[in-house]
Amino acid sequence: MQFLAEKGYRVIAHDRRGHGRSSQPWEGNDMDHYADDLAAVIKALKLKEVT
Image 1 (cartoon, rainbow, N blue to C red):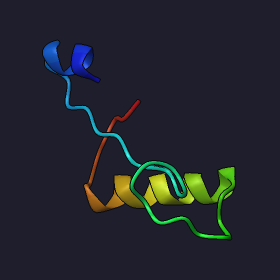
Image 2 (cartoon, helix red, strand yellow; image 1 turned 90 degrees about the vertical axis):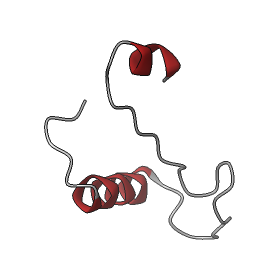
Image 3 (cartoon, rainbow, N blue to C red; image 1 turned 60 degrees about the horizontal axis):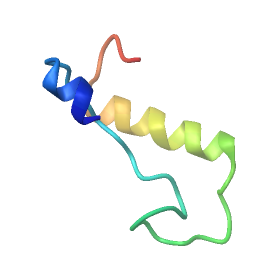
Image 4 (cartoon, helix red, strand yellow; image 1 turned 180 degrees about the vertical axis):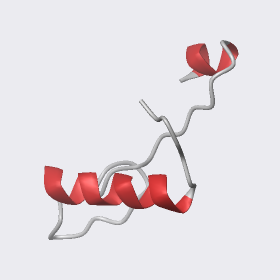
C-alpha cells in the first residue's frame, strides 16, 4: 500500500471478517460475504474505476 500511495494512488484496504481488528463472527466468513462487504465499502465511498 505504501508503494502505491507514494506513486500518487489512493489506496484503501478493508479488514475482512474475522481478520485483524474486526469482530470474530461465527457466520459469514466466506468469499461471498467478503465480496458483499467489499461492495458495500466501494458503494459507501462512491469509488469509481477501482482495481
